[in-house]
Image (cartoon, rainbow, N blue to C red; front, side, top):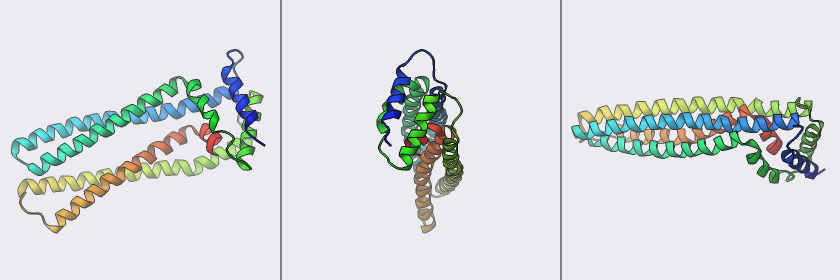
Length: 233
């Protein structure tokens, strides 16, 4: 088995204008949902980063006015990180919104990813091909099983990554808040405990970023699993 029939079927269906294929409509709807989900998630987080940037700017001005050097530097650092992260998330929002609004144009380049497997992958592509040629909206039982197997680990992974990210962000806020209050009182002394807390604060921030990425990716895939099952199983 190879993927040429599937690639040819998809290419033909994507080019035709009349007599829409219901199976293709389901596949393209899933692909559009996949990108719309990330656009909404990334857009919301980008807006949150914008609010954080204003918050850090206000703290920076207040701290600078009182001569709190540690808080001034910390606010400037986190403000810069918020700008960078918010900008990246904003670009991600725009890129995914385009694919969500025009799924055909975004989906067609994915055809080149087909046909790189054998065995189970080739069998899966043959099942997708038969489904698309049938024109029926209902997925075959074999594909439903594969999708459920994917969701069985992807949904818990999304939930776990999201919860861990929230916990680390809350812990980081608590650590840096404690250090800010501590150095407002006496900025001259750095004990071993404070140095340890600074390292811990940096670790929690660094660890929360990959967890955020994994949360976004797994949530996106959980909401629209058909396209990913086609490409990766």
